[in-house]
Image 1: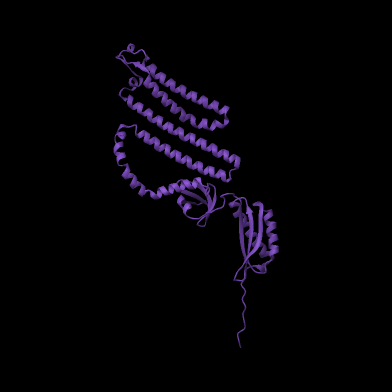
Image 2: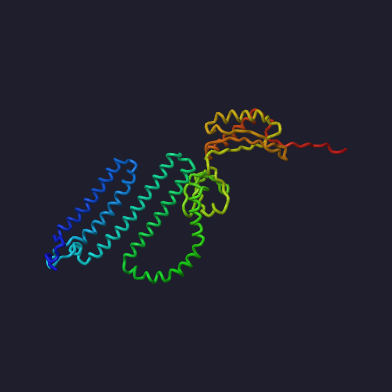
Amino acid sequence: MKPSDDPTSTVIGPPLGLAIVLLAIGLVLLTGKLLARRLSRRLPQMSDLAGRTTVPGAVVVGSLVSRATLKTIRVDAGDGVVRLDEQLFGDLAGAVDHLIVLVLIASMTWLVIRVVHVVTRAVVKGVTGSRGVGSTRAKRARTQVMLVNRVVTALAVVIALGWMLFTFDAVRGIGAGVLASAGLFGIIAGVAAQKAIGNLFSGVILAFGDALHVDDVIVVDGYWGKVEDLTLNTVVLQVWDGRRLVLPVSYFTERPYENWTIRDEAIIGAVFLRVDWTVPVADLRTRLSDFVRAHPLWDGEVWNLAVTDVQENGLVEVRALMSAADGSAAFDLRCAVREELIAWIREHHPDSLPRVRADFLPEPA
């Protein structure tokens, strides 16, 4: 076909066609950048979204414009009119078009992940600003956002890889055989991955429930620490001495554990002393009151001292209670109270220190 035979085609030379493609991509990138900057100025709350989606959005639009331009513009090849991509790349035109499709799929996946990340961050920021960082609702939101980000990222990547693979004719050709054996493979995989799948569902239940959140202070098998991370498979506990205890999420759905901050971070600590019967309880209570009220870790809510038990070895058990803003402060306050009461008894009433009494009867004559 000659150039004049198709009145609907725009016939240009290859250099001009390539220049049009590059110009179109440049205009798209420049327009996207200007729009993002203008949006950030007009709507400051959208600045994070505009800043994080500008590059992937520009790649998406640039890929679409490139593909449309290369396939739409017709150029004069001397012996006829051909598409611009055929003139520029010859036999490699199909490969170049395939590469652009792969870039488009990857950039769309990148854009979706960025949008979800920005939206979830905005949700957490709004909840934290209205409720406070340490509130139960804020911790629940952070935990759920972490899970949503990871699930969406994993799904987006898997879907994108599958989409990319099915753009290859060879992969599409063996699809029928793969689907035919999928039933048997699914049964085998289901049996083999039964425990892993159960652990996965346990992670979802744990993250979207109210039993455990990131930054909660818990006690597991005698280990006291803070929940540092919660994934679909594991819970990472930062122990008080800096170690990390990694447990499967199924542990927390099958076994009991202590959560000190499930509703409110404020907690009451207890200190137990075993002393002699001669201890002046009233004076000890006064000393506890003076010390706790002057201590910066006390939250001003609860303090008390009571004799809670009489033991068979001739000692009495005294329990001192004091409240603090969170589990860490309560632990430090308990240590300080214990040291103070021991020092006060040793200095002012040494006769009340623990002792064992025994009567020695004279031997019969």
